Length: 255
Image (tube, rainbow, N blue to C red; front, top):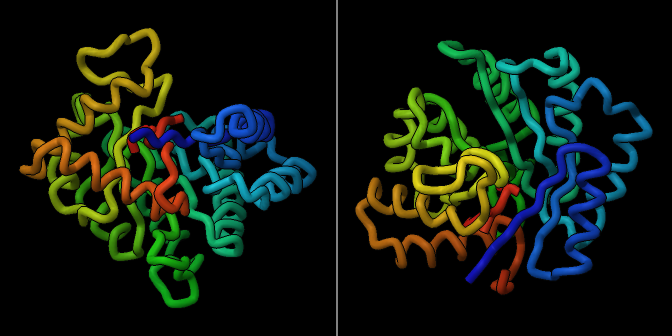
């Protein structure tokens, strides 16, 4: 069983994700503006993103979020961009794929993201997607356990990538254990974040199995059992209704 999500990070990549889904129906597109591109996303660009998001093939909004580490767009532009995505996801009932990075040793982006989610209505009856679907997904998780705990209180799902193997990401082990089984995903973040044993030049969906085994070990379950649960989670979160299709980031098995 394969599940592959192809997120957009700007207008052209969102359009390309939709076009790929027309060629291969096993690919699920998402449309959005990454925080790196927030400052260049003018009103006409956003209008086109909204049009794409209404496409029935588009299963999620994003990738968006906050990145105060590389800070390629000013914070205010990132926050305005995030708010647009959260409002759109809520309006359409589609989960929002969230990137979040603070500067090393800091957590401002994490705290700002949680605040924006709460202010947008996440975790309330006003934003309760059908079928128990989470309002948003923390993609390629990175952060302290209390950040994850608050995100889970707001109803979010959490996806783990090869980032968990990097120095400084040790907190992910605790988060892997505390996340409810029905809100877990794994991903490649292809072509980035290769796990140990995979090619450093280009990560590919096949390597998501390495991260999945890491997650199974931390949770004390068999990989096959975890894999079946992750596929079921994907189908529910992204409204696939048992379609034969991970998250791949661009993979549950492969955001």
